[in-house]
Every structure is written in C-alpha cells, then in structure tokens.
Image (tube, rainbow, N blue to C red):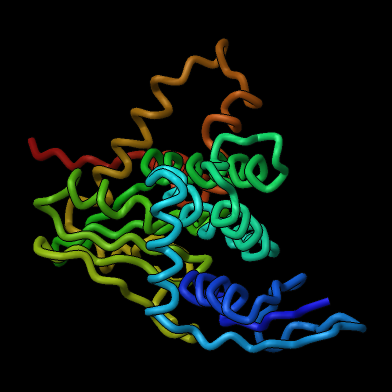
Length: 267
C-alpha cells in the first residue's frame, strides 16, 4: 500500500501524477500534511509541487481527452469533496493509459462519478449567477455575499465581469473567506483576516451607514414588489425550495423582513 502526501492544490495533484509515473509506483491514498496515516503502508512519498511537472502532465492530458473533459476535471476539483483528489488521479491515470478517450465511458465508476460531481458543481455555478444580490455602497461599489456549497465562485467571475462591466463590484464567499473585486479594469482576488470584525464580513449585509443614500429605498421597493406579485393560491413551498435553495435565502434581499416605506410629503 502506497501513500502520497501532497499540498491539496491542483498543481500538487498533477505533480503527484508525474511522480507516480516517474517512480512507477501509484498511490492507494492521497493525503495532505497532518492527515492520519493508514495503520499499515509500504511506502510514503511526499510530493513537492512543481509547476513544470504539472504542466507536462496537463499537456499530456490535452492529447488524450477533449477540452470539455479537462474543464470537467478542474470544475470537479472545485467541489472540495474529501476524496476528489484520488478520484481525479485515477481518472487521469486511466485517460493516459487508455488507447482511446475514456470521457464517455460511463461504465467506468470514476468517469460516472466525475460526471455526477460536475453536474452538481455546475448547478451551483448557475445558482450563483441567479441568486447573487448586490448592495450599493456609499462609494459606488456593489457588494454581494453568499455561502455556496461548492467553491464555484471562480466559475462565475467572467459572467459578472461581462454583465456588470461598467460597475465596480465585490463578490465575497463567506464560507471560504475570499472573493473577487472588479475595478472597471481587471478582477482581483481578495481575502480578509479571519478576525476581521467588519459587520458586512460577518453578516454578509452592508450596514446602513455604508450604503448608498438610495440603497435602502431600492431594497424596500424590491421586497414590496416581490411580496405583491406572490399569488398565495399558487404557492408550492417544496418547488420553491428546489428552485431557490434555502442556503441562499440568508443573503437574498427579497427574503429579508419587509419594512413599510416612510414617504414624507409636504403640502
């Protein structure tokens, strides 16, 4: 039984593939530093991530499977599932060793499993594009927060850059404590310290003191509209939760408590 230790990065995984073929010994377990080791094993190898080795493996894969299959691999990696590294490793090994492409061989358990994982991660990508709700800050930047089940935020960046090309925005993953900032020119990866005490980094909602002067009004108008168009006789809670997962409700403007508008009039 062989155990490989790697740094839990995608380049580290590809380097592990390179090392396995170079050493002619393939891992039964892929673990990260600090993980509990099996009670019995024959060999322990520590993988040192090497971008050149990773690139060589990737170039080799490009000759064996389609670009869509490669995209499937990277998207499945973002699932962050406990054993995803080992599943992708087995897939890559089979793809390299097979005389023809394996990407549509759904009789293979690893090919089928990765197809199923890809579908789930892609569904999360679509949900992010549907359910992100921006709040306008006083400086004109639009802020949005959410907690996706899978690490799908990188898959949506280009969509938001194209969709809101003339607006500065920050989209922040509350679960993983990182996000992306668009300054009208380029998108930058951002992160904050775990001990950051800014309210919007804890609740995901801007404090009124940080909002644009009209933001609260627009939020109340949207919530009032959302409530007004609801037809009680057609309500289907089960279908509603399927179409709009409950985990997103915390950050949806329309799911917050409606406060009656106070409109001042002078006569």
